[in-house]
Length: 168
Image 1 (cartoon, rainbow, N blue to C red):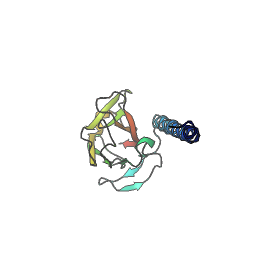
Image 2 (image 1 turned 45 degrees about the vertical axis):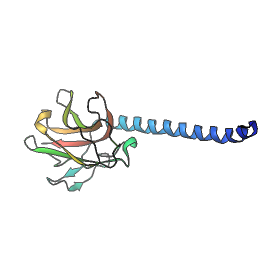
Image 3 (image 1 turned 180 degrees about the vertical axis):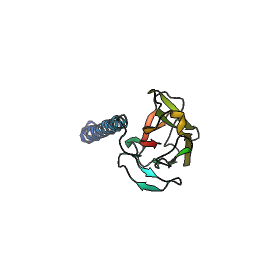
Image 4 (image 1 turned 135 degrees about the vertical axis):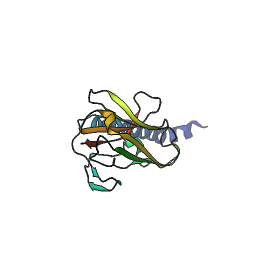
């Protein structure tokens, strides 16, 4: 390649690399900010009936993390409020074959603060998956934050979404 050609493409190439690098940093920053929001104390909840229809919306619940936007869609937990005796359901739609790498898991904190796994899905091909658990597993009533993670076999996992469940 001639030196003249190298000089002509060097600046545009460096500019593109800088733009791409800053976009990656921005994406990481957005994912980190989403994680920080998920770690906040629960406040409010999206109310749903026993078939999953939304009655009222909490704008903070069930948003999709920046890394998973357009790749995964999480529907509000139902029924919400739920009871200690009935099943609680959460539907996750995986839109692309590579959207979730390590499986789906729903986690929450028990009354003693320990983070526990409530349900998992190991198969992560495109489609709708329903994660189901019994609220009695949490050993508490009141508002509980649920975390949807891409993390089968991974202690921490990548957060996909979060939302609050009212247990009565």
